[in-house]
Length: 120
Length: 246
Length: 116
Image 1 (cartoon, helix red, strand yellow):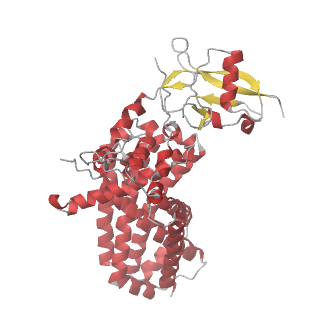
Image 2 (cartoon, helix red, strand yellow):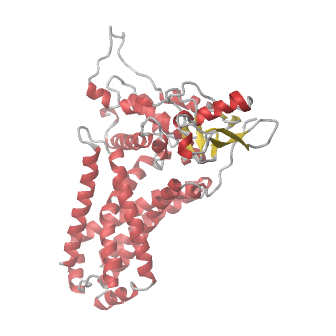
Image 3 (spheres, chains in turn green, blue, brown):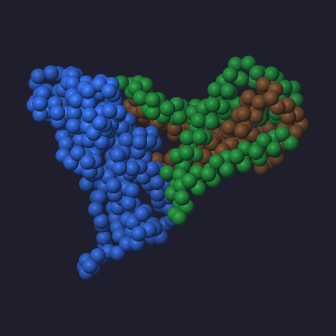
C-alpha cells in the first residue's frame, strides 16, 4: 500500500542543478559538430585555395551562429570537466587544488601553442 | 518578523487517499527552531496523526531526512527562519516508496548495503592478537567516506537512482570505498564484481547532486568517479596480463 | 570467471576524449569558427595551412583528436538519451547508433586526413 511518485520524462526541468547537468551532457553534441566542421575545413584546405575561400565564405552565415553556440557549450564542457577532475583523479600527497590549477595551466599553455602554430 | 510560519506537509494515509495531499499547519517561528521542531509542535499540539521519523535531532542518526521546498535535507538541521516568511513545503524523501505521510520505505537500500561488504575483510588466519595499527595519514585516506550516516539524502537527490532503481547508489558505493581505501582491509577484490557491474559505478553519470545533498561532506560522487578509474585500470590489466600474473 | 564488460573500455575512451576535447576544441573552434569568420583575426593564408596539414604530426594529432572526441560524444550522448529522454529500453539501438556512429566517423576522419 505504499505510494510511488511517478517521474516525468522532463524531470530535469524541475531543478536548476538538474537542468545545468543536462546542458553539460548536451555539450557532447557540439563536440561532435566540431569534428564535422574540422573535417570539412581540412577537406577544403586539401582541395586548394579556391575551396578554402569558399569554405571561409560559407562559415559566415548560419554556420557562424551555430559555431558561437557550439563554442559556449564547449567552454561549458571544458570548465565543468576541469572542475570535476580533482575529484576523480586523486594523486597521493598532492592537494586537489594543485591538480585543478595544473589542468587550467595545461589548457592555457596548449591553447596558446595551438594559436601560435596557426597564426605564425 | 512574523511570529508564525506555515508548514505545508504532505499527508499520505493509505486506504484513505490514493496519493499524497498537502495539509497546512501554522507553527511558531522561532530563531532556534528547525523544521523538525515545527513538525514536533504539530504532532504534540495540533495533529497527533502526523507520521515522520526522527531520533537524535543533532545530525547524527540520519532518521529525519525529508524534502523541504524541493531539496533533500535533514529536517533537524534546516531552520525555519531560513524559509521565512514561508510557506515551507515538507514532503517525504524522493525516490523511495512512501509508507505514510513523511515515512519512506528504504528496504531497497538495506538490501543493497551488505552486497558491497561494508566491513573489514582480512585474510590472516588465525586472527592476530591485539589491534590492526594504522597511521593518521592512512586514516585520512578514507576518513571522509566513513562519515556516512545512511540518511538517504544522496539517493533522494540522485536522478540516476530515480530513473533506474537497480542502481547500487551513492552511499553504498561510498561505503565500499570507505573499506577499499582502509589500509587494514584486504577485501577490495571481493567487492569488485558488485561495484564494477553495469548497475554499479558505470550507471553513474556524475550529476554530483549526491555530494551537494550530503550533510556530512562524504562526496559519494567523487568516490564513484575514483572507483571508475580503479575499475578501468583493473580491466586494462586483466586484458593485457596473462591470468597467472594478475 | 568474471563477465567481461566493455563498459571500462568505452569509459576510458570517453574520459580521454573529454580531456582532449576540453584542452583542444575551445581554441580551435574559437579561431576557425568565430574569430576568422568575424574578421577579429586575419584568416591564415592557404599555403601556410596546407603546409601545416601536410605534416604527418598534424595528421596524427588531428586524427587522434577526432577519434577521441567522437567516442566522447558517443558515450555521453548514449547516457543523455537514457536519462534525459528516458530511452533506456531502446538501449540496444542507442548503443549501435552512438558507438557505431563514432566508428564510422573515425573511418571518415582517417580518409579525409589521409587524402588532404
